[in-house]
Length: 166
Image 1 (cartoon, helix red, strand yellow):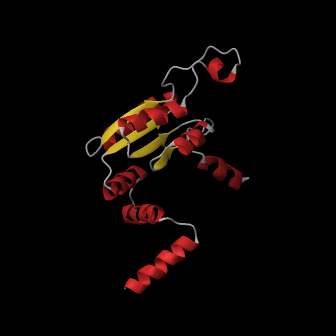
Image 2: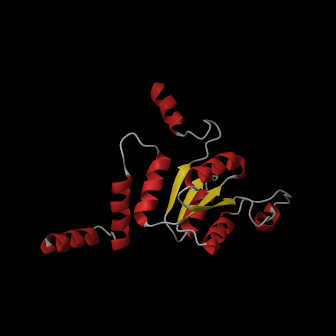
Image 3: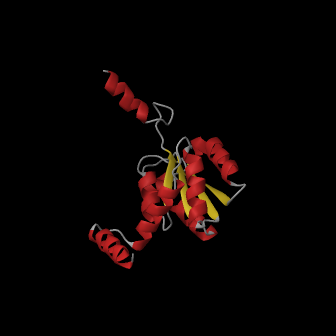
């Protein structure tokens, strides 16, 4: 058995997987269940990983959905919502474009959740680009529950279905 473990570790290292990556993959495998929704899988993964605090980074336009996610998880985990306008930074301060609207602040969302002690972050509808910034600055496992798709009501698969039907 010990020889098999060494062989597996060597193969994983060869492909670039760290022990932490393998642990994440094992927890994901153990969380997958037929006929379960993504929320149930996230809940099972978090439970398997010993997660206690889950941060939910969301777009202001999906605050209602983010609150529902929080309600679905809060019976088992401490949760915190981080809206995209956290810090109330003017867009002009970042892009020097004369705009007086508030900027989305994905780095501020990460910092807020990090300060709170989030052990897992869930992304709910952050804008394209903002999700990339959030993910690259997050120091804890991060998963996307909802992607923003304005045309197809946050269901980007519909664009693929539509293209396939042509």
